[in-house]
Image (cartoon, rainbow, N blue to C red; front, side, top):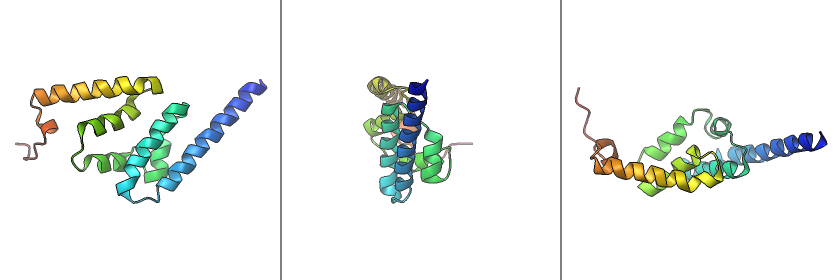
Length: 128
């Protein structure tokens, strides 16, 4: 029983460490913040203490991560960079990160080959 209580205390301390890091990231200019938050989320995955909504709440004041994604997707982004970011949010364990990234890259490749306008940078208004 002591081991379980200690383990819970360790997990809480680890979560608090990540939340403290998130708080410090909230003070960074947006140009640096998004990449650092993505790295923080990958770090939490490595330690098995994920809580993305809480991190988004601490850094952006919104648990949905809308400002995080808006910042990442507001400008053109390299496929490999986006796949790297997405894999950190989709993988359920560190062991899945590379597989997730490869799957995302393949999906993007298929979209590009199919001529998907959202992928190839079409900026014309959608016809109504």
